[in-house]
Length: 248
Ligand SMILES: [Zn+2]
Image (tube, rainbow, N blue to C red; front, side, top):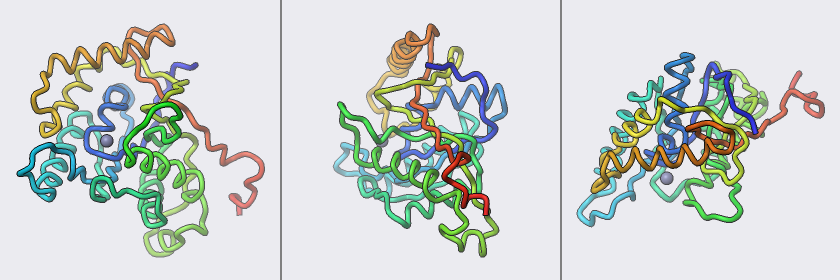
């Protein structure tokens, strides 16, 4: 168990649907942007076009609404850029093409940490897109982004360079081992979630803040903090032995 007190310079948040990143690491984003000037890029994998119980809603209309809501939520947290891959909700795959797209953003933004959903939960279920987005993020960073030989056209034609991501922090995990003290940033997290208006119908903002307080207090208890967001850390160890061809 470790409390993270050294914010990264740059982070990339790979996330499946509009509102997942705010729920998973919204307070951490707000804190690091405000206190350390961390540059945060959100990579939104799907367009969330099935996320409604309204029978009259058309998927293309919902996708447009949710894209704007995501822009608003991210702007609120101080995110530098949001990149939309726009796969239809429920169709995300850990495909070669999707990895090419995620690798491109890793090489463009060169993050110190990739944030994603933990795809390896063992006792609880999560949405298929959640698992796919987590796997996609980890595979792209761990197996592809660092090598000149993967997606070489990004290097020859787009002017990008390989990038070694040091580590990933995974939210929605069953095994958190690193924590960020988010006291003072709970309102920012609640307000960023409130920006997803289409997803929050009938839910009371005060109730939302109460639930965030409870959730972050529960996580904080693990490390003696009043309020924390917890993550599972995965170190890619791309600089250590066995990877000599990285230095070619
Ligand atoms: Zn989701």
